[in-house]
Length: 212
Image (cartoon, rainbow, N blue to C red; front, side, top):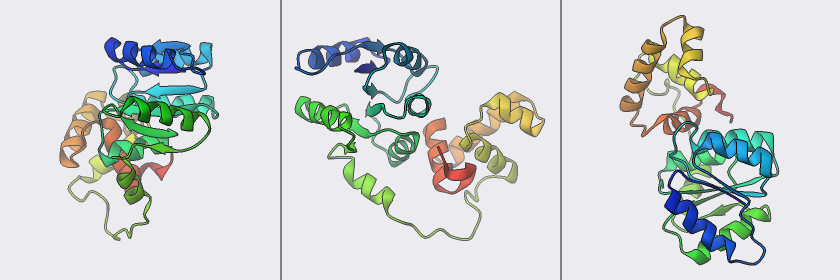
């Protein structure tokens, strides 16, 4: 098992909890998504406990890369974020479960066991949101995000494709600073907490191909 969280106290607490349970072995820890990918490549864990809000590479992107590289790995998101956009983004990135950090020790251990066995796992407070997200929705014929300008909508679509600011700037033949300013404006206009939330919202609206 690999524990990924940017707070050492959280990592140490999880390692202590899981290390005392028969059948669990913590093979590594990581402080961000980039380190998690490197450690996972070396230690090849079966289960990864993944935080979302981390420096360098966040948990959503790390999950996407990790599950692409190792489809059999069970990524269990462990986070404070309970908003629908984060849940949807994690599911589309390939997470096998989503648990909040206020879960009990028993809930956490049960979630780890279930994820390791290939089951989808969601905390009790997350399950209703997951059900809602999986329900089919009728979409209006109008353009998504009418509050955005055409250029901002184009940039959001490229963000949803997974492109960074530099790549978007090259695609649109503008300066990276122009893209960065536009992305900041987009987050405000669509009420997205961060880039990962914007990607989730955009893909749900049909921008960026809607794939992970």
